Amino acid sequence: ASVTLHPEKAKPISDLLLGIFFEDINYAADGGLYAELIQNRDFEYALSDKEGHDPNWNSYHSWTLHGDNSTFTIDAASPVHPNNSHYAILDTKTPGAALVNSGYDGIPVRKGKKYDLSLFTRQPDGKSGKLLVRLVSPNSPNVLAQTTITVSGNSWKKTQAVLTATADADSATLELQPLTAGRLALDMISLFPQETFKGRKNGLRADLAQVIADIHPRFVRFPGGCVSHGDGLDNIYRWKNTIGPLEARKPQRNLWGYHQSAGLGYFEYFRFCEDIGAIPVPVVAAGVPCQNSGPTVKGAGQQGGIPISEMDEYVQDILDLIEYANGDIHTTWGKKRAEAGHPEPFHLKYIGIGNEDLITDIFEERFTLLFNAVKKQHPEITVIGTAGPFFEGTDYVEGWDIANKLKVPMIDEHYYVSPGWFIHNQDFYDKYDRSKSKVYLGEYAAHLPGRPSNIETALAEALYLTALERNGDIVSMASYAPLLAKDKHTQWTPDLIYFNNTTVKPTVNYFVQQLYGSNGGDKYLPGTITISNDMNREDVKERIAVSAVQDTKSNTVIIKMVNLLPKAVQSSIDLSGIGIADSNAVKTVLQGSPDSKDARPVVSSYPVAEKFSSELPAYSFTVIRIKTK
Ligand code: AHR
Image (cartoon, rainbow, N blue to C red):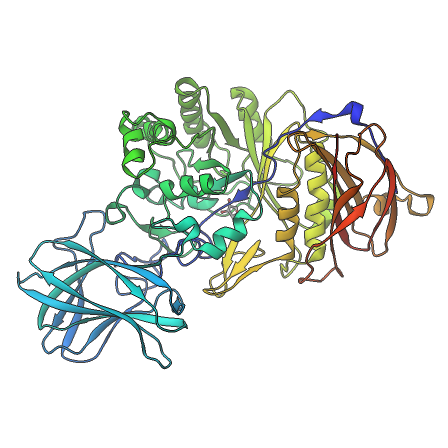
């Protein structure tokens, strides 16, 4: 293949193209990125699905009483906060028994590391007593850390302590053992490693956050996905329930079958974006919950939306979110952001309204109210509408009709399809009308039967991303989905990064995202690709793709080349007119057999000139970074 670039025809493209989609699915938040080690710290677990099927998913979940002469019950008569109504009562006749939390598949602890313990306590009988708190390993040495807390009086009191672990344990438990007879009320029992990402309190798991940061995402979409709109009106993700003191936040059932503590809430999402240099892209419900039957059944019924009589209040909630992110500290919501420790604004520029909703009259009416209100009150904010579910053949017709009618600046499309679809549809956006809304490809992934992530799916995505760069004048953003999945708690595959309590396991597809994230540009350099005669068949040609972008800030030209053929391809590249500043380029190659899951990028220095050649190995993705004058 020979590639001749045409710098004179360079066109501006979005410099936000590659970002991430974060949803609390597969234990991505609680038990995942959110560094809290105690499961059900607030005793608020409630039945885990809409029908209330799992009777074990209740306030007792993850807690057990070890020992005799005591009882452990749940009470709700006099809570720490009305939003956090349940708490534990330990009634100790003779000291010895302990309340034990098993964490999320155990509590991982490392020798010498410090852990922040906090809890609310109260003595319902108004007495005073002592409570021994220990981190205990199932192996020897048994006690890893301990502290004793004094509890007195019948009003809730928060106690904090630091536990330092004396040994490693992958699966420790936290034990709370009253040393005095009598009744003791306990709530918000929390344990965080002090080493969170960037050392933040109420922070994120450092290794997981770092692997996300290493993608160099330009934006973070949160909190979903379906989590944004919930599976019923009472399950819509309400941002106001997720800010402020942890004990005042409102936990709720996660529609993926577990629990959302709301500990990782809007403040923490905004802060994470800032910490990794990404712009925040919150997605709020368009006044309707999730379509009943999933995205693949066109014509499925939709639940009713928020009653129109309540829409003013809901619209105001969304306007308040913008004030919370950007408002002056003297505004009602800007003040709350400042109280949380962030007087500076979070510089919100985009807001998504709706997530893959069925496009019905119910949807349109509510979306229109929200869109018009944001446009009027905050013309500086770019609203991203939704194209609705993807049905091949009638792609997004109704969603786009609304976008065209209202002139929505950007529209969110989602598709989970086969590698073949990505290979055959590289012209998907070439055909889009440039005068209409821009596109945010908010969710995509290549799915094979059985859904493994391997070089075949990764290269199909890499190939398609060359087409997104080519269309970077109208495709403003793109994010692979879902991002995270915890071993043994995965509701959806494939995902980009798998993990358990101690290990983070990026997939081969992760490295494609990382290579695009680290090698974006703000100008697209069109090129002419000539394929040698022996390969000049459509089905062969479409398995080779090239994209060249220029990053004008760093004076770099970046060439990306994908070869999805089972044999190596010689490429010759003509950079005439580009002005090379350094003949030592940096070349990164990701290659492997189609079912390889372990392939990793290999970086080397590579000599380049105005005309140079490079072999594209079978099943490979090559990125060459060249410094320009
Ligand atoms: O990414 C998983 C789910 O797929 C998202 O929650 C939803 O938006 C889509 O259907």
